[in-house]
Image (cartoon, rainbow, N blue to C red):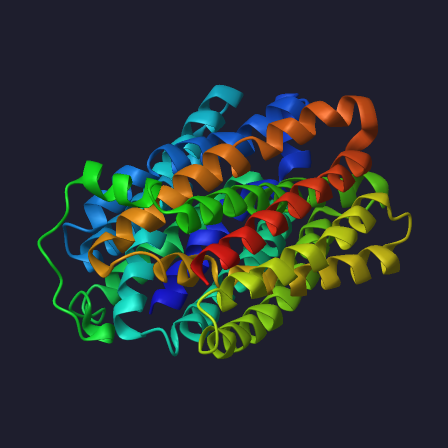
Length: 390
């Protein structure tokens, strides 16, 4: 059930990138304005992260999950009614606010079904919904936009999300907090105390920094690859949306399942095992980010996207599982929310506009390639975190 909700969480947010060329044509937008549409979502998603995490630690997580699903799905559908850049910017920002509750609530819930022995595998399986949802959002938004116009893409995805929420309201169940580890959860900690605990943990701070860097690179490719393919290789909207997502996301699916299994096995031998798997993911992916931006042929680009996607999956499977190794059960929603705040404000929120600005000087391909440096920074931080926790 969470897999299905997460599917729409990512399909809805990805849909707009595949219709960038249509928006550029119908509303006369430049690359910086398009970048701002990507950043609007990330800024609000990030700003709401800590607040959403604190709420999740204090209410039924089922309520937070379904409430968020209804909110972002309605906003997605309502995006079809806007007629200006300002309207699009506002709707993307509001959609970010709706979606910010999902991952803190769902990851906290999954951690109470799965303890340290199986947590990475469980989250890795859940993570596959992100990749399938991104593919679906990229391809079907482009296809619907190509045939019926960009507005119908948002109506379809938003309407289906609302229907899903109505179906799952009866069936979604919530475990007791701390259940998977057999611990009694203390009274909810004040937000200031929880943030203070995280701030005093070197391992947690390093993981936050690594997520900020890794998310920057991921958002660069998700935001700009469809337009890069449309411009450089003259693909149709549907084909550029599909090519930009399907190879990366299917490879990430395989990488996430592999990374979950490998991290659980490594974690049994070393507390820093999950973080070392993540470090392999970002170090291994960096050269292929360069190749994605510099490639002059479609086959080479597809190979680079596939390789980058696999390494990305190794990292993704352990984003929250690694943090939960250093955070108590009653604070995990807040921790996940803080990760979203740091990762999406510092990384995802800046990535679209930074690349939009750099593209004026270095071209879109060269700007994408430069993002590899940020991946290397993430790897250094992850190795440091693994050493800190032992």
